Image (cartoon, rainbow, N blue to C red; front, side, top):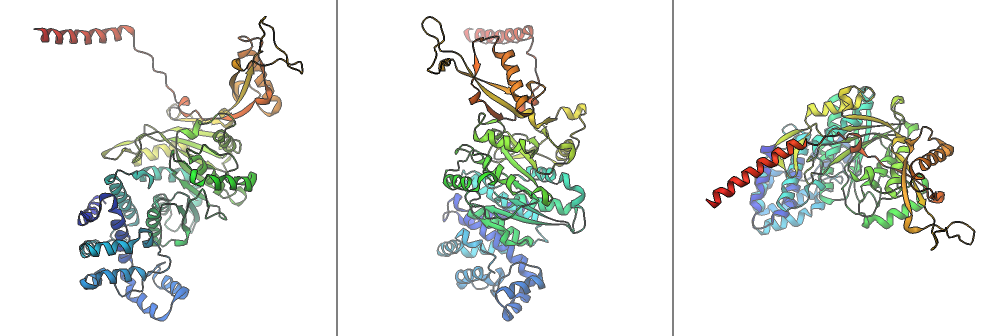
Length: 583
């Protein structure tokens, strides 16, 4: 792919002077799509032209699909070779060519491609660019779908790098996707191998379609007769255009790829899916969708996709977490699984009673979180921060019910020969297999597995936040009473305590909670402040997932003698250098 990528990227040399580097993508990407579709249509072009002379509209769509297997077509008399044979008419003929695609191919307008053709013609570059692309064979027999996806992502990365933009906003590294797909499919191994198995998968932040494509590839590797129907929604016009054209080329139903803001408008509101995947943006605000999201939450009630809670407006990734949970096929229809890549903040941000804590509470109390996998750092193109794959399942197998598996996969990686932005590490095949095996062996806590895997009850992540009050005292040190003859609290001495659900044995039900809180208060608080009491009206339930705490390894400090020896050695070097200077 690198040679092909470099060749296509080199075509951008023809744009220098006319376009700035950050504008190259608006020409190179649609031309790459056009050439891909042109190559796919080449073997059946003559037959389609005959059919176009006989039928039109929906009948033509059906006939082309029946005769050629393609879900799209072009009724123009032109192709790349014929376009180049008429240099004087190239501009008009190329515009006519892209206008003759079937209705499902609406991708070129997203690039404002006609305007780019006019600009290239005006600047005398159009024939050069078309001729260069005519040299590239992008038929699937020459460039398989997986390699084509890599090419698109390589080009996006290069264009973003040239313009100092965030390439990572557009796509997720293939190695991370392959791991998530294998974890998603892990619980359906036998079912997915059945002849003619059909499954649906959905990505609400589809980008260029990388997740959907890898999911299809991985399934077909296991079962060539299986079918995975791909669904996606994407807000960025160019990413949507690439994703949709890729799905069209694969023979997928193009109407299953939609353009729009998933948070503000779920265009698949009436559908549930076998599998869901997403890598939403981290730390990106949702102000533009805030009013609509809040209105939808109020109207939809307890069964709405945002019912569990709302995160701070400054970061919308947990909205996608609850959205995915709502899109899983319900239990009575066979259930669904979801995988989502998030940064560390959804594990612990927000105090008890806050939106993020309530979202975690809802997920854990409904037993939807199956596993969380910590990925290596420096895995993504635009950030080196810690990231995690959450796996959700609403029909856990019996031995996983009530449990969450935490997997520390931060050490399973291979160094890349050349960094791509912030990405200097990748999860190679051996590392991926090791991680999936640790997942599969979750109940076999061998010494080796225990280092990387912790299996905890859902209740391990819950706690009560209690408000501890102390009396307001008068000048003589006596408690001040209010009009109801109750002791007034001193707000300056007010404090809170977090009490884990697991602090005492019995934590189930109201009685258990009250007994646990009472035991904690009498043991941990009253011995230090005997006049304190709990304001029970302010007690809140919270949930957090302190991932790193469960894998913390104590490293003893170096012996003082060793530290002193190092210091003395450094002092000796400094004194020697000073002596040389003075001499």
